Length: 415
Image 1 (cartoon, rainbow, N blue to C red):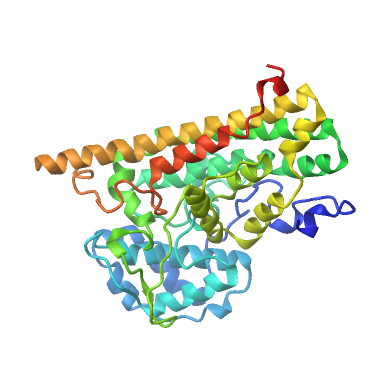
Image 2 (tube, helix red, strand yellow):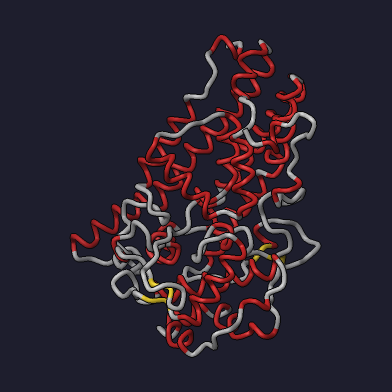
C-alpha cells in the first residue's frame, strides 16, 4: 500500500494531486496566449481549420521556425504550448485524410512538442488533458460556466460540433467536481470506521455521477452525429492500432524509429478511473490493459491520485462489514449511477459512431452520397473502433458489465 494513503497519522487529501477546489481535474483559467517569441505557433494554431480546408497547413508548418521550448516558464504556458503543438500535429497528419497520411512529423514541430511533452509527463499527441481540460475560456470572465459563455482556445474541422463536443465533455468534468472532492472523506472515513462520514461522501459521489449523465445528454443538442463521425473523428485519431498508420509516426529530430500513440479517448479522463478504484470495480484483462495504458495520457499527478486510491483500504469490504443499511444503500446508489452513466455513454456512442458507420457503409455500397457528403466520404479505418484504438462497443459493454459485479447482495442494501 502507498504510504501516502495508509499512514493513519496523515489524513488523505487532494492537495498534492493538482485537483482544483472549483474545477476538479480541469485546468483553472488556461492561458489564451503564449509569450511573443512563440507567436509563429499561435498564428498557425488560430487558423488550423482554414489551413486544413485550403490544404495549406503542411506547407505553413514547413515554413515555421524551429523555436526553443525551454523559454516556456510555467505549467500554464506548457499546457497551452502542448495544446497548440498537438492540434497542429493532428492537422498535419490528417490534412489529406486517411489515405494521405505522412510518415514523418517535421522537426520544427516534433522537437518542441516532444520537449514540452517530456516536461509535462504527457505523450506527444492531442489528449483529453489538452482538448478538453486546457482548451477553454469564458467569453464573459465573471459569467457562468455554461455552454453559452464558454469557447475553445483552438479548434479543429467540424464547426459548431467541435465546440459542442469539447465543451459538453468539459461540463461532464465540471459536474463531477463534488464527487471527486468527496473521495478523501470516503478514504478517511473508512480508516476511522466513521460510517456516517462515508455514507455522506458516497451520497455526494452518487449525486455527482448523476449530474455527469445529465451533462452528457447535452451531446445530442450540441453535436451533429454525421459531422462527428464524418469530419471530426479523424482529427482525434492516433497512430497506434490504426490501420491507416500501421507503423506509427517518426518524430524527426527525436528518434529515427516510428513511435505509436493512441488518439483521444474518454478513457483518458481521470474521473471514472477514480470512481472505479474507489468502488472496487475490476476490469477484464483486455479492457483493463487498455484503461491502464490510458493513464499514461493523463497529467502525472492525476494518474498518481488514481494509483493512490487503488492502494487504499477496501471500501466495499468496509460497507459489507458495517451492517449499516444507510451506508449500503449509499454505496449501491453509487454503483447504480455509475451503471446509468456507462449505459448512457453506450447510447451516445451508438448514435455518434455505430449508426453513422452503418449508414456510411450503406452509402458506399450503393455508390451514393448523403446530402452534405460527410458520411459517404467518412474515413473507413476506424469504423468499429474508438479514436483511442479500442473496439468500442464490446469494450464499453464489458466495462459496464464489470461495474455491475461490485453491486451488493440484496440483503445488504435492505432490498
